[in-house]
Length: 428
Image (spheres, helix red, strand yellow):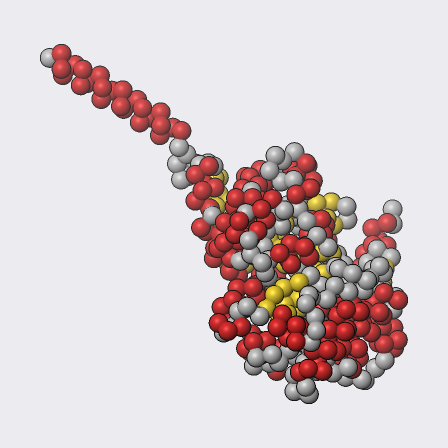
């Protein structure tokens, strides 16, 4: 009888414990649901990071919707118009000004200032600045992209150079020497005419802004951009680069491997591509380097994606906890291992996987001098106009002076609505 009484008491205690423990774990219906939209490869991979977040935050469940990059912009605008945006989202850095202008993004200044995880001082300054629009913080960098030189070390050595160029003058000498060795059927550099990023990087290296008067007018007729466009066109006039687009190159990696060109301006995704696609006998013949500038190491683009919270979200605090979790150096290192995307925080670069990657070191150096593109919603249209005008210059259909003046006229027309809206905002 005593044994039965003891058994009943034990079972009673177990029952109490089950009730108590059950009360500590929210049921599915009690959990706060966060809707998170993510794009491309990142949308596939993010699911691998969320179980740890949900374990640490048992009251939150994250629902991820993966969007293809080709449809993401339209989907976001449709969601905004229909009041159907998610709680938080991955947003390309050049899209942030557009959604800030729509007043769709929640301000993050106070959340970031009080955070023990998100520290502005640990982020590369140019990347952080892409998220500051009209003086307010609208996103937190998630991963970064910038452009550097990929180059053939053996071809430079044959041309008499033991290091990558560090200024435009050194770059010109190296390109001339490589072309002289290569002969008529090969080139010093590949500058695809359907890519605006190389010219943008050269423009960002100048002291003059690409847009003036607070983004109201084009600044392409400035001495700085004229200098950048002149240097860009000069490389074509000298025959150092073929007059072609990427589509005309059968395979960039194969052509780089066979020495069709010695320099290529590209982003971090090509580290793994060159490791994988170049033949074994060429794996020791390439390296990366920061972009040369007019008088020394130069600036480059500040790209990538950030994490934003939409103003319409009813779960701002929970969304911020997810942003903090994804901003932790350990999470960023894991994210890099899964995607190859570069982390925006200096702390994450101390990890051995990145610190020991000789090809990534140029990106680390370059990110300290990354600069954002003009932060206006119309930027992508402006970049397209810049690219088309540069193609006209390269083909000899228009001179530098006329091209930059015409480009400013086109850009001023693109920005007409912006000027009207800014003027109206100042009207009492």
